Length: 361
Image (cartoon, rainbow, N blue to C red; front, side, top):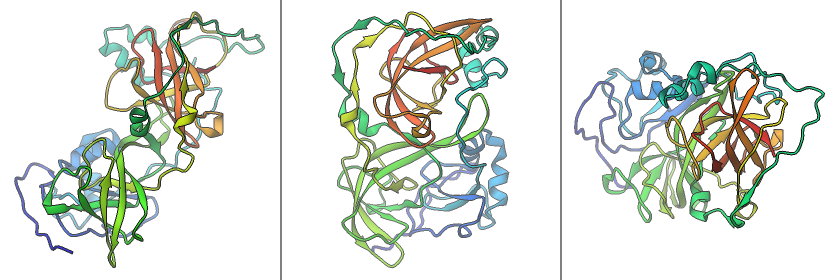
């Protein structure tokens, strides 16, 4: 294995100085109640704290748990940091009492978009218990189609925790790694195995209940293991849709990940929202955006344990006043995990926000 040396190109407050190092061991080994995070290019302690806690000012909590970091201005790509883990992800009850809780994320997004946030968050509708719910009338528009394979393969998901295997060095000290490039990962893996290359973005918390759901994870491409050493392995990147780098992870490819189950209907226009409780909530977007629209990805608090499956459709709606519900659009599930799912916005009548409610179709 080629030896690499530390080299710095600049120091910022809490910055990850850009260099390539030999494979890093976990900061203090696995500890109950903690996750091991591998620093990537451009990371700072405050930026990591923002993605972990939602508050960049809490960087000292990370520093406290990592005594090997003697200078908060000097963290490096490939370093391993222990992060306090929140309570495990839990299923959100299907009968979410939307009339008695507020949705801070949706409220903030509505305000930023120029809507009346106080009215948008004023949910006082009746549950509709005992009322027969009519079939939602829709208008078909457009032919049946299939989702783009490229979009489907790049669609991310919410992972329950951080992966264990990370890229800790790139070929020839490269910062950005593309198809055909080699890299080193921090675990010995038998040659020939193929894995998905992913990037963790941030922890996701339910916008209504505050419950922890997991790490928002993007799929970058795949990698094949070519060589195993005593503590590390060499991989070659394949079919990359975005550049990878130190601090990105390898995970097993889901054998149940099936593109064929994602046949899209023609665009449909919701005409009303029937009474009854919400089935679920939109909890995050693919990027840190205030709103999304048609052809964008969203993440749900619904998973296989609550009936979500590839191809299932949900009406998206919002409480806009006392007893008043407004249809926002429609989404279709692309892939589902046990507690969460990834979906595509197939129809939007306006901006879709984090905190918008779902009704299964």
